[in-house]
Image 1 (tube, rainbow, N blue to C red):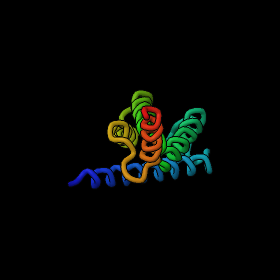
Image 2: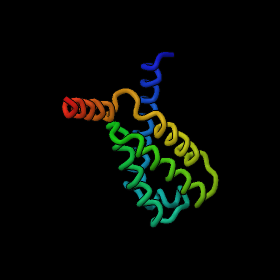
Image 3: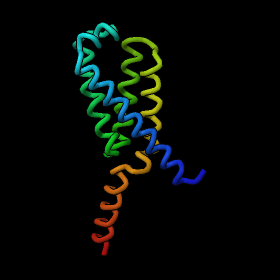
Image 4: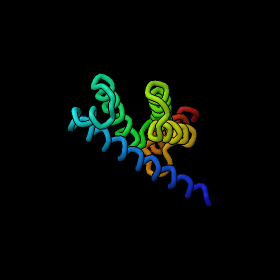
Length: 127
């Protein structure tokens, strides 16, 4: 597989994760009482976690600061596992976060364009 193919796979992973994070957050924020009953977490934990998930999802959807958001996802996943025990969703969250922190945003990420703009500014400063 070519480098461009990997970049597209990473881009798709980033976009799917962003939509999943934002969808889960909207579902939780739309019906917090139902989410408390379903997930068994207190409202004091659930609402800030949903807000953070939505914000990280929005950053990932645009592909802006993807590596930093990957680190935030690792932190969220590790915190959830440490606080509430081993579960599939937080483990996957941490693993995909680590993948994005290492690989970047992939195709269609705003990070690519920001980097190109910074490179042009540095090149002009050298001339």
